[in-house]
Length: 273
Ligand SMILES: N[C@@H](CCC(=O)N[C@@H](CS)C(=O)NCC(=O)O)C(=O)O
Image: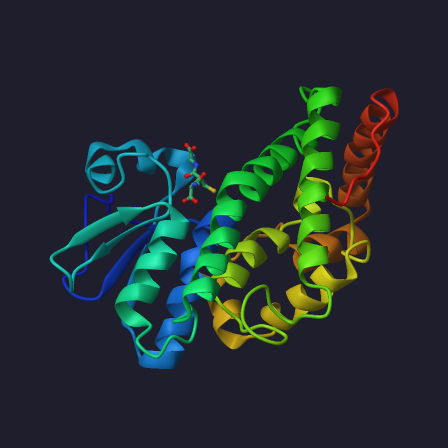
């Protein structure tokens, strides 16, 4: 079978071209692109940047994304405008293409609050959950202090989200709130809580669980989570595998035991703020 041709730059000449991989950071803009496709017929294409073979460090990709990470976009309909950082990409896509303000806000305070939740996500929840995932899943090298510290700090962010969603459907907007990029950004990580040592369900944070299920049910979200492909450790798939695969379950129990030992050793106490 012939090898796949090596990526060497843009393939599209019109629409948005996204360079991404099957990770929570990658799914944030692909979910929004699918929502914009449903709402406005926005055209986009995706190139799969395989992190395993270091495509994201190749010179052609660094010209698009000097940070050498996914995701990044090129907007061929706007002078081949290049952009990286998922929250900046989401902000740009809304300001350029969400002309009816379906996923971002016109109201000054609401748009500022949406930005607050975007910035909180990338500055707070994203790094702690990313490190929680890495330390929780990297036995036997994993350091007990770091594992309980990052998993604990990620759990704290879920407490913050849970309080913010009390009596509300979505994070920002009048009354019970309106679905927006603030929700999409945070959903993309909550959908991987299990992989980061945060348990086999979300019952500890009932408002987050309700909100996560409502967002997951959206057709555009389901498609966004398949672009460029599905990830086998998103919550539903991971939790099902733990139930059905005895060997996998045992490995998961070892990871959980390591976390618990670290929590006891360092006297971890859950804090919701
Ligand atoms: N703050 C960045 C984070 C991007 C990021 O960390 N991407 C990861 C994949 S989830 C990556 O490309 N990692 C490859 C590497 O670090 O070499 C964003 O929100 O876009």
